[in-house]
Amino acid sequence: MLDVREPAAGFLASLDESERPHFRHLALIRPQLPSEGQIRLLEGLAKSLVSPRLLTLMARTPHWLAHWPILLGLAENEATPEPIRRDLEMVVSLFDQMREMDLAPADEKAERAEAVRQLYQQLQPGLKPVAKLLAKQLAKSVAASGNTQELPPLPPEEDDWDALTTAPAGAPETAGDGRLQHGDRVAQARETVLPEELLGFLMDADPELRQAALQNPLISEELVCLALGRCDTPETFEEIYGEARWYFRHAVRQAFLDAPGTPPELSRRIGLADQLVSALEGGASGRREVQRAVSLFAQLEEGEYQFITYWAKRQAPHLLRVVKVFYDRLQRQRTGLPERPEEGRWATLEERVFLASQGTQEDQLAQVLRDPDPQVFALALENPALTPRLLAAALPAMDLGRIEQVAAHRAWAEDPLVVEALVHHPQLPEAVALGLLDALPGVKPLVDILRDPRILHLDLKRQVLGRLRGLYLGMDRPHRIAALRASGGELMRHLPQEVLQDEPTLQLLVSDRQLDPGLLLRLARNKLTPRSILAQIASHPVLMAHPSIMSELLFNPKTPRDASIRVWGLLSEAEQAQLMRSPHLPTALRHLT
Image (cartoon, rainbow, N blue to C red; front, side):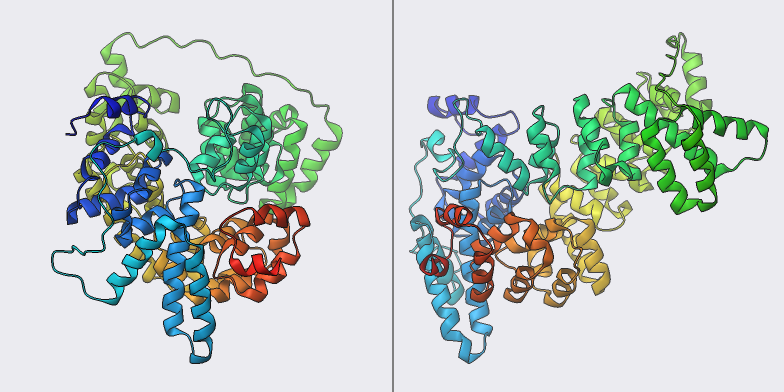
């Protein structure tokens, strides 16, 4: 344990509770050469930390950057402050261009070498020695000890932690309380590529920030559902409900019903439509069913007729005339559902045991899962009416003992939905989590584990990454494209070599004219994306509607010169002037201007 002196103790008080253990580890090993085990620890932290201050500290420790996995992890981590990450990405791009230069035809080597030289001149002065050292390590063998004479000097044991963890001067300006100014926050909400940050903007109390986040090209159905489940601002629910792209999606509508913060009137409105769809799908086998469907039609809100019509067109075209008759002739008005009477608490253990083993209603089962008596909980797990969705929703609030009990259950330990909720529980021991991995099918659950900052088990994430790599390499080309789409491009972040060096798959992916702009943004931003793919993105029709994609193409030093010139000509003079202020704009474009 680090013997924290007074300056470090004062700095510790400014950190969050989750950041302090990591800072203690970093401060302990910073003044010395890291061992092999410490290098693996630093590599895991570089990839998984979500604290910009601690990532800044790691990026300002040169003898750590001399290890390629650590530098690459910091460059790929979307929580790394933007100016620092772009500096590190330029180092990554430098070595990628050197690799491509060695493989290029003889008539292109001179041009590629000049591009490498210009990129090296653009590197931040503190990173040039690191780049030289990495190049020497690639060019000649290193002694068995791993020590070289060119290592940067080691820092002292005590240092100015506040200065080392402060965002660089190139970061957006902040207000007096340390927060970004409002205009910068709106721009950040519209352009951020960090899912957790985008989720925070979706739940923000400022309506302008929420609207900017909804316009972000990386917005996805999964993020919207997460925001609905955690949000308590009524206006947010109405804004998302008012957008047609979310209004018709079944998963989003179900998230409205499941979210505890959904306004009662909106929940009633969507619930009625859901009940009506279920009644129509079941058919009318008698007078009672017909009367129920008519009653639901009469209570339906006018706005929900659009969804019922959409459902009928896709699932039951023969009912379209029925929907039209009700829409045209019935007088509908907004009416609230009568409040349900308060249910009394269970008075005796016998009644609770009976409900745990024989109950069939969801609210009863949700209650017995929270019962303090372990016998009641054990019986609830055996109840055939308990669904995986209900159990998975109750898992986050359980303590360690009950989590381990569910993980050891013969049936629930094999259910994918329950296992996924178990693995994401922050208290689950690493050994138990490793034993549950075989029950997770497909790519998406593995990607969710890698992106979850609450999971601190580095060995677990390492095994998940290896399993994900094996799954991806074993896929054929169409399945790889489907996996990239389903993950929202997260596979590029976790498997950069496997994904970005598969040029034929990327060409097929980008050739889709309706491609998600978020995927194009990730490809344009990544410094390992092949030159041919960057040129293909520069001619994609989606490009014109998203200036952020155009900016990332121009900032990427691997974008071919003719493609960069074409994209540069599409920008206004104000946009060109704004890009010129960035130190990361390639030298060729500066000379052209």
